Image (cartoon, rainbow, N blue to C red; front, side, top):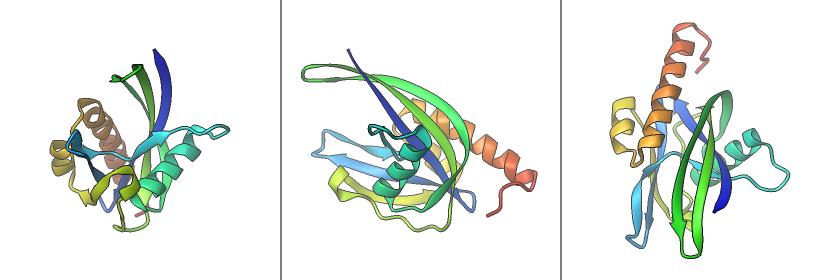
Length: 146
């Protein structure tokens, strides 16, 4: 078994959530949250910010740590056990540009209920729910400035 660690973000601007649409030769397609692999010497927050910027072009800042999710998948030579650390992030605008090199074909900001139904994976839906609850709490408390 191969163990891997990734980090990502639930990016929000004016109440809407950033999603990416991935399409890889019809083998995999679906809407996902931005995330990616931790590089040697990187902290988890640094990885999350870098991956959000690389995959979506969005300029965001971390508001707080949400938690982690996990899943496994198979590759030709083994099984990968992946752990993903998630951060609630605030974007500076609605700007996004999907990273074509990583097979992201579309991106955009969606209302919570739209994002929830678009997301392909149950573990990302769960993270979205947690992040959005935190966002609403911060917004109601006047602690979300934007």
